[in-house]
Image (cartoon, rainbow, N blue to C red; front, side, top):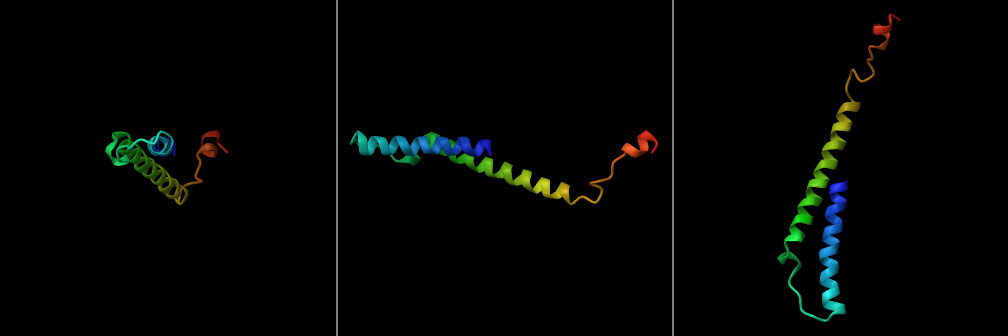
Length: 79
């Protein structure tokens, strides 16, 4: 989720700077997609979603494992 948040902040920065230039400074500006930071932010958000999803699926798989609650503490202590 940290990767997604960093990408979201970077995308907000790109869009915010475009809006600031257009509406406050009243100057024409380039498209958002002409900036490399936009694509870096987009990639970071996609990777963040993929990492979150893979972690979530891994958690679901580990919770449904048949030997999830099999501990060897009793064997080692001789109980």
